[in-house]
Image 1 (tube, rainbow, N blue to C red):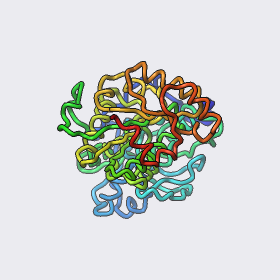
Image 2 (image 1 turned 45 degrees about the horizontal axis):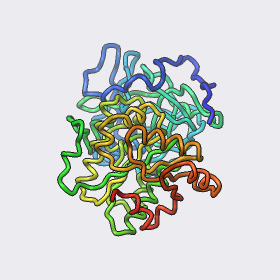
Image 3 (image 1 turned 60 degrees about the vertical axis):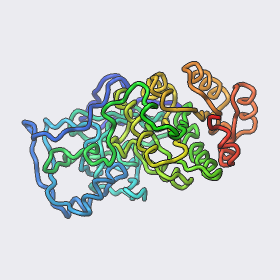
Image 4 (image 1 turned 135 degrees about the vertical axis):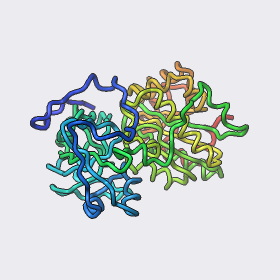
Length: 396
């Protein structure tokens, strides 16, 4: 999976920023006064309702349906976007993403000149784009179909050049810049103790996490199949996605598999979790599990996106909080070597690996190789839909 330096920087917009993956994302923007050198213009309600909204901005879309009056655009050279800020942008040139995932996950065809409401955010996707939030309102890229915009700093060789957007201004209301954090229905726990397991009452649900070697290793499918198997065995299962990039496909997959409740990081006001500081990542894990557990399931199953070497994931796995919250792990891999390395890394960190699954199990040969190499069961992805196979992965 080769990642190449971006070959299409936007003219007149030099890439800036530190070493990717090391700078923490700022907290969601708080309401603030208009900065010096910036201006605010009113936006007619009809214009906002005509703009195409994204999955990441779905909670804003609900509000605009009820009342689109009183919004404006913050513009000017002194405007500094932050991850989670909502921006009204115009499509300048179509590229890789020619459709925008809407609030209900319908893919809306984009046309040059369309105005869209998306969120600024950092992107981590070895198979697609790496991107960062710029420090001004320069032209940006649509770096994820779910509605994430930033400036591409690297891309996979198979990707087309990214769709180019012209930010028209940060969306504002009477309280300041509109941010996903302010609109979110869920809030992060303010105080996350080192061992939050004690907060759960006796009989708290079992928590299983699905991890993988990398993007597209089969994590989401394995999680959905595990949910299906547990539901078929008579268990009530809640499911969630702790980290990743905002998109509706996985949450809807988990719902289709039979999950009684589904949440992901976007419900907590985060467009993505790349470059999120560790304190907020660990709070997100505890908060999401806490919220799902409150719905009364027998089992909570959560996905940790990307691979074990991804910076935020790696720090989380070595945090004692992870072992305190998560009982067992299902590990998805693309080949036997990845399975062997991943299981070894997790076990060395004191994490209980219940099984290996994922893309490698599409190949009988790769499955045999992995079975011979690891000391945990290797279960075909769709084999997890069998009640016996699913319940066998729960703690005894």
